[in-house]
Image 1 (cartoon, rainbow, N blue to C red):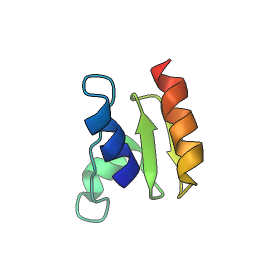
Image 2: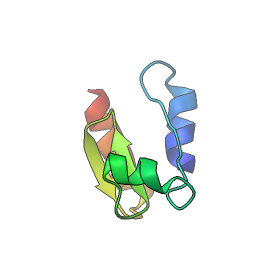
Image 3: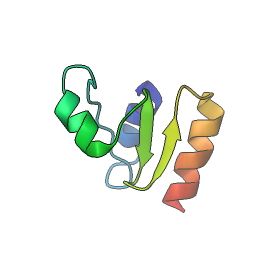
Image 4: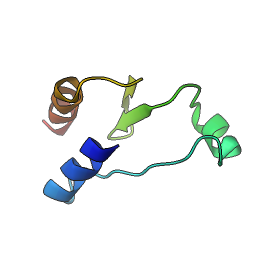
Length: 66
């Protein structure tokens, strides 16, 4: 989440970052289809499931921004 927040600050209007505590907001998580955490959605489409190296997440975000 930290990396997504940093990218959102560096790219206003292109990247947004929101965090939802899946345990505290179970209904929202179920409605969104979140079954494992962390789950990173990129531009509402592509997903990255699990903890991945920052370099991999950066590549996915850059690809989505292109």
